[in-house]
Amino acid sequence: MLTATFAVQPASWSKFDEHGCDWATDINHAYRLAKAWGEECIIWRVPNSGGDAVAGVRPSPITESIGFGHCA
Image 1 (tube, rainbow, N blue to C red):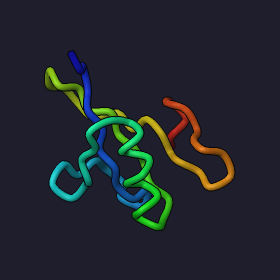
Image 2: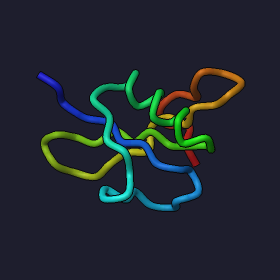
Image 3: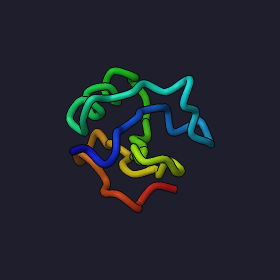
């Protein structure tokens, strides 16, 4: 059972936008979506049980990702 889903949006958006983001089926799909945006993005972790989205991963062209909790 999945406990969360992932959403992707540009890092320039200051707040999570559930209507403007792209929803991913899993974290691998989220990375592919972030790459497709063509700009710096944030991958958000969204709990399936309700609650606030958490900015989790900021994919980087230098390293594949910067881990959860390192997004500003």
